[in-house]
Length: 171
Image (spheres, rainbow, N blue to C red):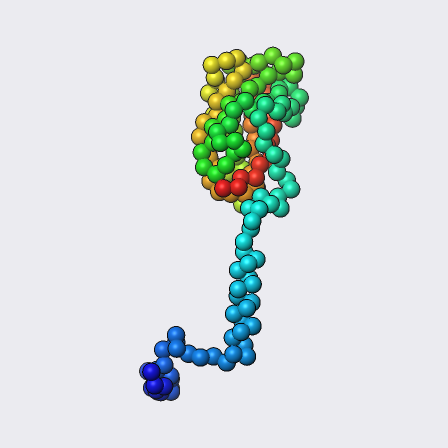
């Protein structure tokens, strides 16, 4: 395609050579192209979004977590998926008093919060399970990957206690 000059609406000379055919100086093109390629290598996160997250605690089933007031013990009996992941999560949690006696007729609430982003997600209420002291939290929704806290609060009779989970959701 021959090189032609034309004029724009203001009468200034402009090249009519298509931009895709433009041949810039190799003096600055090669380093720029090399820098772009190297920057793409830096974007790869082989270990995922949670690789450098040191606030999260690994999620393990059947681990007893004492409430902040010391009144209740929370234990995760089942989780789907396990460990928690992006999207809908279902947990079966047991709540017992300090002596290990299962607590019935309690209300259990989960409050997911993403502190780095300043938002939460849905807050499912626990439904009492088939066995004493067991509560199903269905549909806990982690809406994006990253660091999350989940405050579990149990209210039984005249006592309230809670525990905070520190999770990193990979996605």
